[in-house]
Image 1 (cartoon, rainbow, N blue to C red):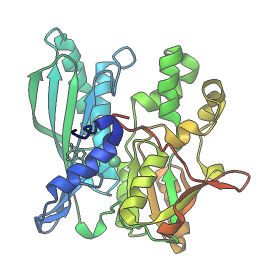
Image 2 (tube, rainbow, N blue to C red):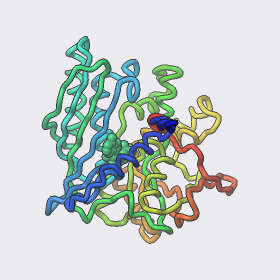
Image 3 (cartoon, helix red, strand yellow):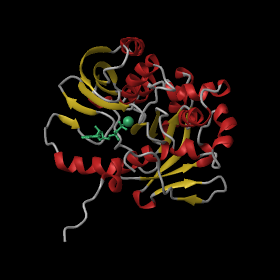
Length: 335
Ligand code: ADP
Ligand code: MG
């Protein structure tokens, strides 16, 4: 009898990506980084070319009852900018492909492009093309090109045992904002959290500063949730880590609202997605210099943990000092 075929649900998004990675396995000498980081890096001589792409699908990534086309346009570009930020690169050009239903009003598309242009201007990137097709649901795919000096870029794979682990901003706000939208709708009192979900701010300038100073060893953006994105960084670097729960940066609105929406006050900060903050590692002797970036960039940076040898695994240290290994890390497509 034929063995039962594995489904995507069993292996999950990341199980699938690791198989795809084995199937393609490029040996192009100019390819500094292929599948496995936030962007692909191609050596073009003086500067490296950075390429990244993200897809947003109606009712999976966004819901038209919460967002308007202008805000959606901004966010579509922002999520790609965040991946370039996590390498310390400079975003430059992008292409956008759209799948659109034929009944969609033209004004929807024009507002969407106004949002896209606004975000593009803010980060000085240029729209250079794309593709358009009929689709039952709205599908948005952006491919963003950027550049950076090869020796300045920060990858997921540079963390070493003994390094500090830092995160920018606060965590869980966007996930809590989305939960509030779903359960209560657009309530005015929780506007700040909802805003974080609808209008993420990619940390492009901060990412570039962290990389250009050569203080850090590895970096990733937190898009799927702190635990899962930390686990990607640990896997690529071949190390373990301990995160101190008591150090997780939480905003005031998060602390105020979380208890009405979750029994576990840290759940969304650890496993909710869409923070679009930077998670990075650096040797302890760089600690003060790293923390000095807070003032220049007006973005909090918090030391949330330490990198351990691989054998020690991935641990979370509770406020009572006891360690546990996280079981469910966060959001993953297909699961
Ligand atoms: P991010 O959350 O930073 O966008 P992903 O988890 O989506 O990163 O992707 C991880 C890596 O896998 C990236 O290098 C990405 O380019 C690659 N990847 C994702 N999906 C595919 C696919 N369908 N085919 C080839 N590579 C993929
Ligand atoms: Mg990323």
